[in-house]
Every structure is written in C-alpha cells, then in structure tokens.
Image (cartoon, rainbow, N blue to C red; front, side, top):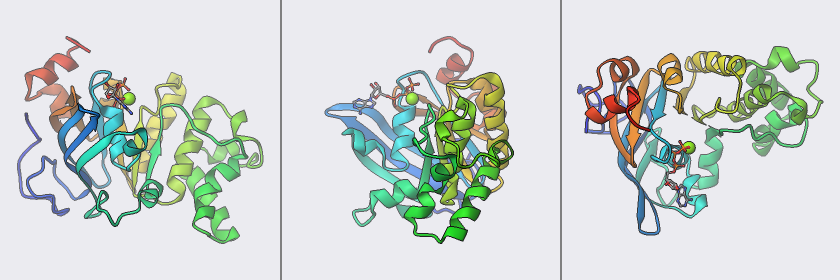
Length: 270
Ligand SMILES: Nc1ncnc2c1ncn2[C@@H]1O[C@H](COP(=O)(O)OP(=O)(O)OP(=O)(O)O)[C@@H](O)[C@H]1O
Ligand SMILES: [Mg+2]
C-alpha cells in the first residue's frame, strides 16, 4: 500500500496519515465501515488538501459512495456501522458531542442524480439559508451568489420563480450544486455528479469544479478516469474497500506505485 509522497506533517495536524502537500481541511483516519459482520471499508486513511480537487476512483462496489457518505455522516443513516475518525477543520465529526445534522448541513453533498425539490429555482437554493434564519436580503444575495458560483445564473436569472423541475438535467445538477454551496460549506462532496449528464452538460460541471477550487475543497467520486485526469489535483484508488494508492493525479496515472493501480488504469479489470 502506498499512501502518497512523504514529507513533513501537514498543517492540519493529522500526524502520519497519507497526504499530499499543503494544508489539510478534511481527513479520515482508519475509517472502517461494516454492514453486520461484513466489512465494506477497511481502515481508509486519506487527507484532502484545502482548495484542491481530490478524486476517488475504483471499480463498482469498491466502496466509493460509502466512503464519501462517511465524510458528512450520511452513511450511518443507511444502517452501517462506522469506526475510525473523520476530522473536519481539526475536529472529529464522530465525537459524541457533534450533531450529525449540523455536519450534513456544513459538508455539502451532490449526488449522482439531481435531487431538486418540487419548488421554484429560487426556493431550491434559498432552502439552507432559510434554515439558518437569514434575513430576506441575505437570502436574496446568497441565492444570486450561489447560482453564479454554480455557473447557472445567466441561464436562470429571468426565471427564478419557475419550477426547478422544468430545468434540464444538467441545469438541475448545477442547481443542486448551487444549493449545496449556498451555506458556504468549505468542502463539497460529489458522488459521480456527471454520470447522468450528456458531454456538454458534463463539460459545464467540470468547468465549474475548476473554478470552485479557488474557494472550496472538493472531493469527487468518478467512474470516469479521463474526468479524474481532467479535474483532480490528487487521486485516490480504492479497491475492495481498501485504499491502494493516493497520489498527485498525474503521478497516479503516469507512474502508479502499485501493481493493482496499474492494472486498473490500464483497463485490465473493473
Ligand atoms: N446500506 C448498505 N447496507 C449494506 N451494504 C451496503 C450498503 N451500502 C453499500 N453497501 C455495500 O457496500 C459495497 C460498496 O458499495 P458502494 O455503493 O460504496 O460502492 P461504489 O464504489 O460506490 O460502487 P459504484 O461504482 O457502483 O457506485 C457494496 O458491496 C454494497 O453492496
Ligand atoms: Mg457509488
């Protein structure tokens, strides 16, 4: 198992975890997930650098979705047992004193298929801001800011009161991204966000991810290795619930340290 290049401990204080360079905002430490007695993830330790895009790749069923769902405490909702730690801004989000609802609100998630609410475009983005009891003016500003960040503003600015379900699939996915960004989450988790989109809509989402990393730390699960190569600074390869390798993306694809990684990226399995 190779955990990325060596070097001094990161500023995030995650000790000897595998990590690339730079400050770490989010990390998992020996994260293990079980369904009954079956182990789905085994001691996965990863550290995600601030303002970078990190991709998670691996064959179907290797645990990618389960892993990202542990990063904002969603996995436990599906009846899974989680051990190990996830640190966000230096705090273990699995500490007994931490409210999982708050965690899910702060660490946003975008899913494979757009999950718009059956309300207006405006209301979809305003949702989280209203929960925070922001004033009408603040909500208005937050909606515009988030739609701009998600690259959707120019397409919907005249239609904010229209039903969100009337948007195209690609627009709906960018709306979900705007909704996740509205509460200023710091980290954005994306689970195969373009797998239901056509190439043009995919390109728009990828362009937006590139812009987002100026402000956000992004973790993206993708089946598509070309996508990882295009958008990610770092890439982790998971196989059968274990982390095989985490490297700078170019290094992982051009000179993987592990035979398993090489077999996967050259299409010899999965
Ligand atoms: N709630 C659950 N209860 C029991 N088993 C689960 C649960 N969620 C996931 N699993 C199992 O855990 C394994 C990993 O699933 P997961 O969805 O994380 O894989 P994945 O890498 O995201 O796959 P894909 O690329 O197909 O999306 C699978 O064998 C799956 O059946
Ligand atoms: Mg998945």
